[in-house]
Image 1 (tube, rainbow, N blue to C red):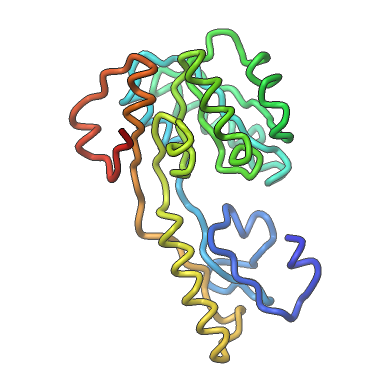
Image 2: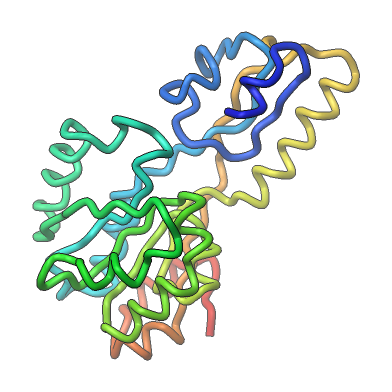
Length: 225
């Protein structure tokens, strides 16, 4: 957004942006307009919670840790109503927990609603910066954790399900190549990913005392041991 505000002429390519229309980055996916285009994230956070429920069937109260500054209004009452309805179908109560400062993760954990036994982590820069501390504290409190970005599984999160962002960054290079050859960003539709990965951290499962279903492990694209 800072780059977009700084120039309306220099081409800008984003490799993995959530909700680019709602954020005002592009006008539409098919016709981005302006000087910005790239690849959009589309994975639903609640899908990761569904898979987490398979891994840890006993979970009943989850906190969605998110940065409200990343997309004002995106996680407001309408989103929460839909997310809670889907969560109730999983027999999970869902609460929103804001994290704007990665340095305050200890305070956030101390203030988690009573009975919280699962964390759903937004793929925000704030959470990414604090991911190792988040995963360490969650393991200490035997809280199952999930996100859409695989870096959280590397950091000790129980599992992640979402776009293959390494592949998305490779695809972004294709956009750069076309722009260097004369294409205008306004004419390059925003691409949506086709490759998704389920990553499970078995070491974390052991720390949590979970015996994961063999069918779930078989579905995983990668297992961290």
